[in-house]
Length: 412
Image 1 (cartoon, one colour):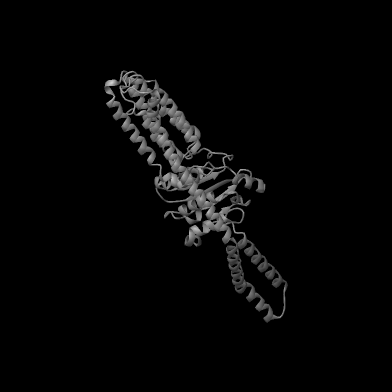
Image 2 (spheres, helix red, strand yellow):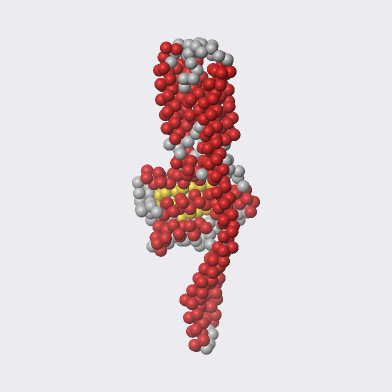
């Protein structure tokens, strides 16, 4: 069996996370997802209204309709792609969406070329701006700024080249009118996301400092708890045995074996109390009173966690928070069979964790309840999948190097 090396732990915990709300605050970004289809719908409605207002100036109706269709496709795709089920939202998805919306804007401009009386009521720059204002929730600020500048240059250049505007002015003014909404809304969205991520990072530093200050006190409290538990064990097992020896006044070979067994149990309990695996503690706390109803042993001597190499050590604080919330959610399902809840961990080189449970419940409801945690794990530099089939819930999460998806299954 290959042991978990310190290099693997350091490598797993040293992965650079993009500075975006989706990466640093996955659950918060999920709650903001409805803004994407909402603003996308606003962009489409305004585009239709603007196209109708330009009816007399449209010399190629087919291009105008095609522009609306392309915009609608972009809105539908970005609404689906940014959904928590498909996190994280990647760089190329961002570039493709913005390129598609800019293309739609260019098609509309082409449909009114030579007959456009006003630049300021064109829908192209507004549609691009409405989608760009949301991008900083999913992509780094610098990347969004680059997209905004390119889009502003393209639409600004087209506006400057138009010579049919009724109000005569410098081409630079036309370019500014077209580019300003794009740059302004993108800057506003970027500023909000930058502030949000900055506050998140500062909160983490405060929490880390507080944890460091409390570490000594927590260690002393743990030592006192361990000592109290050991005294309880001594009073319940060792003291009666020693009292019996004193009363008899003789020591038999059987007494020696009994004393050895008691000593080994006490030593094992002490070691377990000091270095109790985090996953085991989390499951026991989540199940609470259910835990005593049924206990199913797994390979490796653990009741519910099969992690002989202690692969849980690779999990960062963010990942542990999400996994803990996932376990608590599964443990809280009314139809859960407590004996079935377990976690296995394999492959020390590329750790893979699999949570299994049998739950009597509606498949759609189970998927809906677990989806936020699967999405959050994907957002914090892991790859997670979920399968709900035949009353069995299986959630698999691993580092990107590990194999995916399930054999014979589908990735979610």
